[in-house]
Image (cartoon, rainbow, N blue to C red; front, side):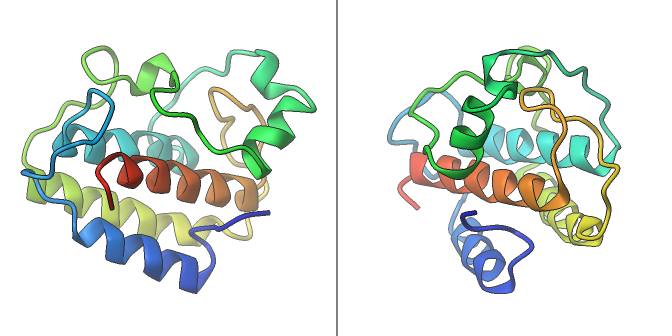
Length: 152
């Protein structure tokens, strides 16, 4: 398994990169602004925490071997589609204030640390049943993907 927000050094790395994201940071590709990205990153975190219910829709990505490949080996491609519930301008959380939204993301990441020993987490809308470790790797991969979008 790859990097994870449950691994202390991986977490420190991703948090240091997040610190460099500002409202003025311009994306290298994609449509979301830095502010939209911050709230976009909080949405799946809220699903894992159980504070944002989202329906699971079975697809090829939720079945072996695609699930294993996507979670463990393949990078997210540029402009990859996301669950509709997380799409900005559709059902994703709307940006309000950059500093407050960043604080909320950091709080969600911190709260996520309490899930490391849980095995009854909500279903991921794309991948279905995930262990805490799989959720944590997916969260790291998601944050990393979007930080790369901004050259961070």
